[in-house]
Image: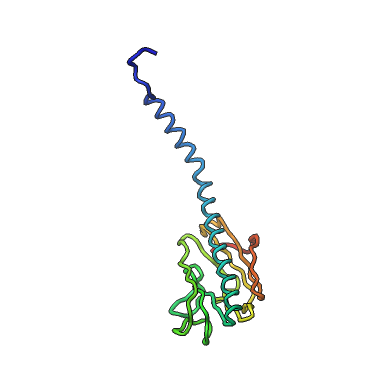
Length: 173
C-alpha cells in the first residue's frame, strides 16, 4: 500500500452494510414482538402468582380475611385489567374501608393486554385458614387482539396456585 493513502471503507461498502442490517431487522422484528409479548405475559402471571401466595400466607399468619381484587370506588369489581389491590378485609367484605389495611397495589396492565378471570369473580377472599371463596383461573393475554401470548394461572379452593397450559376455551377478548 503506498504511503499517504487513507484507510477506511467506501460509501458503497457502508450502504451495503446498512442494507444487510435493515433486511435482518425486518425479518426478526415480528419474532421479537411475540417474544416480548410472551415475556410480558409470563412476568404478569408470575407477579399475580406471588400476590396470590402472599395473600394466602398473610391470611393464615394474621388469622384475618385477605382480599385480592380490582377496585372501583373502593368496591371490588370484575375489571382485572385495571390492576388490583391486596388488603386485610374486615367486614363488610370485598369493600375497602378505612379500617382495612392495604398490603399491595398492582398498577393497571398495558392497554393492549388483558387479564381475565374464569369465574368472573369480583375478587378472591382468603379465609384465615388459607381457603378461597371459589375455584378460579386467570388468563393473561399479551397483545389480546391477536391472541399472541397467553399464560394461565389456576387457583383451587384450598388456595393453591399453579400455572397451566391454556386451552382452546381460553381465548383473549
